[in-house]
Length: 337
Image (cartoon, rainbow, N blue to C red):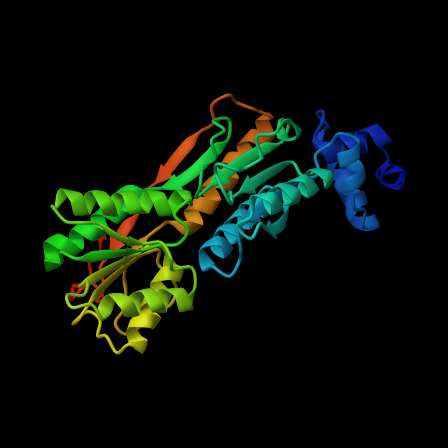
């Protein structure tokens, strides 16, 4: 910093003010400082800055895992917004374990991050509300925690699911529609199941959920048992893109024709859904926008240094994307939820 001040012909305090934006500096002096920084290749020591109580210009992201394109896309969107704000990110995973999530969040604090964006592993067992995080800006997305102080970004899980199941019922006459899910303790599973359940009950039909489809092997066993029944289901509604892929693979392995013998709709779009045969009808989430909105909320809090008692809850809309697997022959238009 002394070298920058000497080359720029200003005091070290002026250099500090320019770098930290802590006080007004004339445009001419700031320009000289920036030219000196460029000439000398000066880079601030971000860890030292953080230890002095200045911003580290780093945020942390904790997602359950990265092999699901949903979480990877969200992380990419957050990283894009971070770069727009001159920040870098530290990305890690919890593996759907709240203890691991807590440990990773503690490590983030040790690295002096300015804020955290978290997709909680378990809303009821999350420890992000502990006092050690009181001065850390936190935004949750996809799954809210019980702490009302956090800003949260969600999508229309319940109404999107209900709309999809009603499409199977009203447009195609399906009466036995099975819900394929994962861990029923997850917020998104419960919310999407509730939408499915309401659609079934309002139609005078019996809900039939399966929450044992956490792997290809388990899903294949569940699907095989169902399609071999005397009066098998005529449609499946899948909780997310993983269960959609598991179900699709199981049906193909069994030689079940889609949609001629069984219809299929999944919650979540994914890259291959449009080019598979048949291409898949899905409830599409605005995944990239979820990440962008969450990051924007976090940077708003960081800039204003706000810790509200009641955070924002933003719910983004979803779309029912009509393709072939539900039994439709799309005309090119999508049905918005």
